[in-house]
Amino acid sequence: MKRSVILSTLLISTVLLIQGCASHGNESLRKESEGSISQRIVENKTTKQEIKNMFGSPLTTSYIESGTEIWKYELSDVSGDAVNYIPIVNMFDSSASGKKKELTILFNDNGTVKKYNMSESDVQVKTGLFNN
Image (cartoon, rainbow, N blue to C red; front, side, top):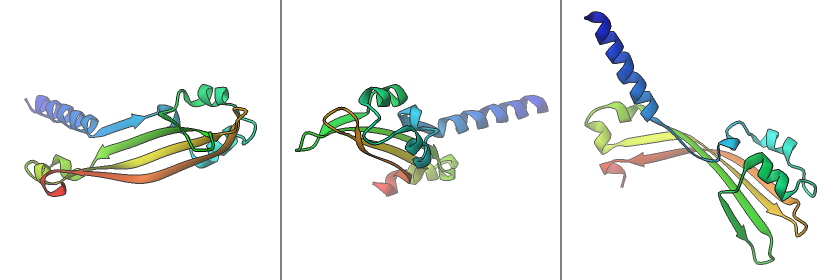
């Protein structure tokens, strides 16, 4: 009987941990950093096709007035904070914390990278009755 209680507790804990983690966006950014991106992208040399081969299709594509094309890639990786696991309290105050990576690439008229920026920032999302 004691063994089944331990196994049940372990199973419930594992399910709670899995439910508390979420990522959204382009998984190819997971292992990237500002340093690794600077090794992979060369301004005025790296082409759109090479970028697509590295990171896939962008999350968004836009243009500025001059006609410059901009591709954006994002990855948000968050997990539930400890307060989420406190019964009743989590209805009033719950949150998730993690990292957000964003890669923005501007292209020249000839289809090569004009400029790029890779940023990584801390993010926190709050929900619950007291956080609206």
